[in-house]
Amino acid sequence: MPRHPLPSPGEEPPEARYVHGHHDSVLRSHRWRTAENSAAYLLPRLRPGLDLLDVGCGPGTLTADLAERVAPGRVVAVDRAEGVLAEARAEAGRRGLDGVRFRTADALALDFADDSFDVVHAHQVLQHLADPVGALREMRRVCRPDGVVAVRDADYGAMSWFPEVPGLAAWRERYRRVASASGGEPDAGRRLLSWARKAGFSEVTPSASAWCFATEGDRSWWSGLWAERTVASTFAERARALGLARERELRESATAWHAWGADPDGWFLVPHGELLCRP
Image 1 (cartoon, rainbow, N blue to C red):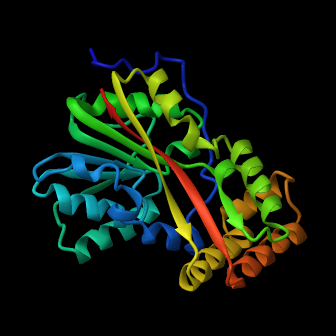
Image 2 (spheres, one colour):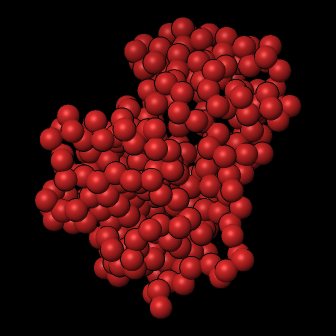
């Protein structure tokens, strides 16, 4: 019998749609992520020889960083999207990390035995799931009793910026509505602790950290990818399909992003909740 029981038959968790999709404007931001800028809270817990599972690995840059820190430990990275795994495999290959294994998997039904990994990591995953508590239970199930589950998610409602460019507040409200209508929780960062407690973890260490985009280069990069994402990604498709935005409104949001990025006083903060959980 599993150490942490799975949901009973007939208790299928609801589905959620990944609101960002895998347009290049999305993957550009994912490729930027490193262990230092996205998993600093976890790094003190890593050492060579640990077995690690990366849930929702995307294009694999963060996975590769973590794999380098636990080598020669076993590393498995999973994602629901087969297409993005090809890019993740290529990233690992470029770094000579031939031992990392990539496969498709659902965070709500991980195809691994109980107690399989020392570290189970998920970055920007729980916000996109209709049943984040169920996913945390699964991560807990496959984590060894003396291991750690590490999760980190942004909080859109707590994002802040300067100056108050007309249109960015409307962009955020529209994004939160689309994400919620797609089955996710855009303000996940503040809810992580509550979800982990419901998932039954015995010990939880909460913390927070942030990305800040304020240099000329950072503003140009961040505003450019969000302007493009606002009109060309799966988010834009979902906004139109749900009747939550007209084309004109999406283009106005893109214009607002460009205006913010061009302002030399521009400053943007993306706060994250993060947890280290003991099973």
